[in-house]
Every structure is written in structure tokens, then in C-alpha cells.
Length: 179
Image: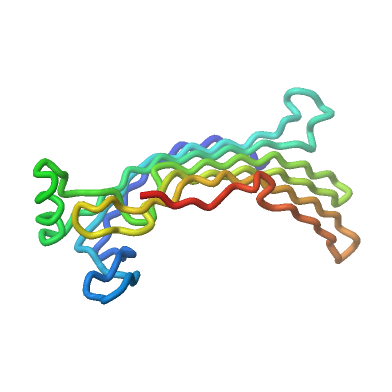
């Protein structure tokens, strides 16, 4: 009941996906959105959910969930932009990773739930570096760096009512973008 092991693979093709980029026509620094011709991604995902009662019966109200996805993505760079890039680096690839798509995502959940309506969850999440702003030419792109997140929730049911307390971002991870 509620336990599983799952391995899956996926593929997705995009027509005209959206990227955030600098507007090269603006007189100042201005971010804008644009469509690129095509992009694709594929990957694999592993998910495990297991009740810990198999270790000892005292742990039967505890369960552990793990999820990890590896994703490979690519966007075809348009010819005008590629010419600017290759003016600086003649060997530059005509592809880059897809805007906003992390190469990996990992989640873990330790959960306690008893028959008296008491529940606690400790969850961890991390998302790999993501392309956050596409720059034009040979200027390095901007990436949002991983910010691991640890959260804790506790709740108790009282008839039709539930009281819940949550604490989020317990690691106080910084939001960082780098070029």
C-alpha cells in the first residue's frame, strides 16, 4: 500500500519554445522574451517509496520517498546568433541547453503518519543549474545555481479541522545567478 519503485524514460520535442534574453535593440539593459525555432529534451527518472516498517515494526508509521531525474536538453541556436558566437569561437556548437531546464532534479521525503491524525514531513529538494538568461553573441549566458531546500511540516487533525505548522527553507540557501 503506497509503496513503489518506478523507472521511466521520456522525450519531448518543442516548437518555438520561449527564452528570456537581453533586448539588443533597447538603448539600455532590458530583458525580454523571444521564441527560438526548436528544442528537445529527454531523460530518465527513478522514484522509490517505501514504508520503513520492514526494518522494525516500531517504524511502520514512517515512510521514505526518493525521486531523481536526469534530463538532457538542447536548443538549436539561430543562424544570426550562431554567426556572432562563431566570430569569437569558430568551433562553438550550434546547440545549447534549453532555457530553464535543469540537468537534474532530486527530491527526498521522510514522512510520519499515524492513525490518530498526526503527520510530520521532512522534505529535501534540489534542482540543478538552469539557464536563466540567454545573452547574444559570445557573451556568457546566465545560470540560476542550485539552491537546496529543506522543509518541515507538522499537522494534526481535530475532527473536521486540521492544524498545520510549516518551516520552509531551513538551509537558508542563497539565490544565485552566475555568468
